[in-house]
Structures are given as structure tokens and as C-alpha cells.
Length: 359
Figure: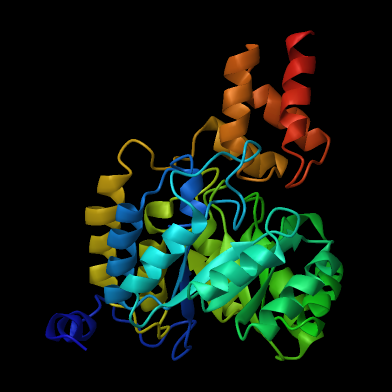
């Protein structure tokens, strides 16, 4: 460990005089998704230079896992989801060269990414694959999780749009992923639609169903302004790994901000082993500088995503459709919410915009 890293870790955390904390002594793993979910904020235009700088900084700060792909995962670069500035494999290869202690993760959505894509990413050095499905469709992840196990990868089941399933149903879906080889199963608030008590209900249901056989994770979006609070609530309910992204970069209003989350975990007494001050510097001096003008905000559109329970990555597509067809993005979002659309139904954005333009 470098001297400056030791100094950062040894620096006293400012406390309010209380002792312990709700997470006192708990070891919490942090996964940073700046270079994957954050790709939505920059219309998937991250370059290898961006990846090199961000990955190097996150690794030096001691972040445990760094996720790198197109925002929609392996194979996501397309007409449907937006073409990336660089190929997934080039981004992965670049990150792999920079990471010395952090593990490298990639996202895969069955139906977008394939097992061939997974094999190629594995050959480039990923350590972890996070296989993402809608919260009631865990069965479509079975072959991908099994393939990842054969490749010797750590495996994550990622249950997106978790607010749309009752806790008991979500727990059943988590078991499908566990039984297919997932080492970790995530409650994923893709719409940023949940409040802390709803997160607790789902994490507790999954934990009870799986009997501590797997680690539980939480991926929180910030469309209702409670991303960090939801992540902390998940940890309090037993989640052992939490996602964030620097400056909250990500779809919709973005994710729980990694630097804020880690600072809050420090205050709650958790043990992350992350150099918080260095992480704050990475967020401010590297990510914010490279993404100036593209940092997410909790504006009308992103707030309505959380309020209506809409997949966060729909925001950019909705704004483009609103401009193209001369309708209000808020009207499109509200109508999409009424139809209960889910990830993978991006074509409905155009359908709704067309219908509204003829009213």
C-alpha cells in the first residue's frame, strides 16, 4: 500500500461524538458502475482514455469492483440502445490493464448480450459477470449464469425493476438465480421508484428465502432523491454489496453517488477499506471534469421516471422522441407508466410519442 493511501486511510473521520453506528463493524463491498451505468449520461461516448483515467483512480482509492461496458451491457452498442464510441472489448481491455486490486465486472442482459459475448469478455480478463433480467424473468438468465460458472467467473444475478414484484415474488426469482449458480443476487431499483422501507422489505425477503447462501446486493437509482438512503437501508437489512457511480453518473437522475455512499458508510461505522478522500477526488477531479455538462440532475423528467416507475435508461430516448414529435417528455413518461412498460420495450417510446402527437 502506498504511503499516501495509508495516510488517507489513517485520516480521522469527523464524528458527532456518538459511538458505533447502525453498521458498526460491518464489512461492505462497493461496486462502482461509473463506466457502465454512467455511460447512459454521456450517450455511451466513453473513450479508452476516459476508462483508463477513471479505472486507475478507482483502483487507487481501493474500490472493490469496477464495472465496464456499454450502458446496456455486452452487445448493447446498437441502433436500439445507441452506439458506443468504443467497443466493449476495447473498454474492458483498457480497464484490465489499470486495475491492480479492484475486480473487473461486465453486465450482460440476455437477449442483448450473448454467451459468445461473455466468452470474449472473459478472455479479455473480466472477473465478474452481472446477468440482468426483469425481476420476474430470472429463468432467462439460467444458461448465462451456468456458462459463466464454466468460465470460472464470479456470478451475479441482477433483478431489474424490483419495485414491480412483491417481496415474496422477488425472493422466488432470486432463488432461481441462486440455483443457477449466482454467487450474489441484487435487488435493483432500475426506476428509482422505491423508498427505504420497500428496499428493506425486498432485501429481507430475499435473505430469508436464500438463508445466507448468497450475498445480497443493492443497485439504487436516484429518481426520487433517495438513492444513498436506499443503499444504506439495504445494508441495514443485510445486503453485503452496494452499487454507486461517481457523481451519481447514470441513467435517469443517476445512481447513488459512490463518493457520497462511501462517506455515509464511514459515518454509519461500516468497514469498506476505501480511501474516502481519494475517492472524492476521483469523482471531482476526473469524472466531473471529463463529463462536464453531462452530469445527471433530478429534474422534471427524471423525477417523473421514479414517480411513474419507468426504467431509468428510457429518459434519453424519451427526450429525443419528445423533440422529434413535438410532444412533452412528461406526457410520454406518464403514459409509459400507465402502460407499465419495462426494460426492453424501448420501441414503445416512439409508439406513445406518435399517438400523443396526433391527439
